[in-house]
Image (cartoon, rainbow, N blue to C red; front, side):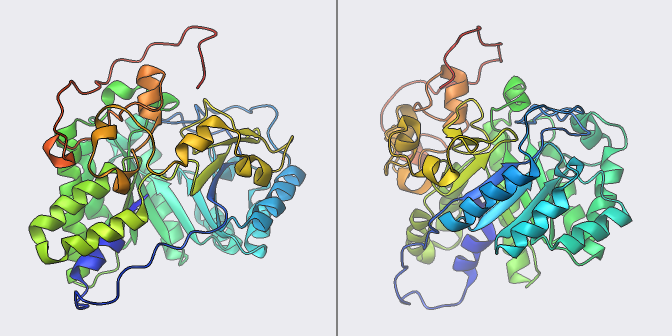
Length: 406
């Protein structure tokens, strides 16, 4: 996750340029865990990485199993749990799980589509004590309904956002951008400001689940650049005007490098210090600072890696799975710098983005260690001097039965 506001604040902050050098970022002993507690969902979104639908999925972890895993996570030093699905509010014991997580001292976030949050449900959400509630919008009105494949989904999600806001919860908008909805970004940012919503998260499309099936709709590179320019300007204005607004992005760590180039034009005297801060951030953290547990208890390097399991918490504790140095994928993900081919391997800013997401490369080629086709930066912007064609996005085709999974 790239925290634009945090990095932008380092530019507009009036601290003298000769202030003490940056210290290395403190890292918790365990990763942030995004936990898909249930796969059932009342919607069927075009970009759903978990291929959720409105039916029960057998074999999901019981409440007792979740509690046992949670104890192990806390002992291992996991600082935060993001409870997700499917739609997590469809799980009957979601609030029991959430209250227990809070009692153990986790930062607890809820990731929801918002359509089930009426006034009564908002009261239960508030009582559970979530630190943050993220609700997804894919555009305004009919655009959102088309992506979510449910008429009226936008009105219900916006109502859920308002109920959470009015209960005093920290609530944010989550927007997965494709070429089909990138034109909606200005209106969504206006909605954020008009409704007094404190956070906006833009997710670039990653090629997992239905997101892979619809990868041909991925945002064109020029569209991605325009979107980032707009986010930078909105964030900059909010900080200058001292308005409470947080902007973050995910699933494309090239955003950090693009921001550095933006800063070199706007704040050239501070760009060197910013570069050091960006390197300390370190870019993609799949298999390092973030982990995923799916509804069946399989552990993955992040939520987009469901094609590859590191182990199952029913068979080994999460702490043992995550600490196992023998897994070849986990070992490669934790290399600094990562050994990556193509444009990513030639990039002068590998220390900043850490090779971006590996899943897009895998879905196109079967090799997760090739270049990420989602990087929207030019060869000149990444300091590339070699020649060669970029890896192009190709239409999805169903893999042959028996094909390798990783």
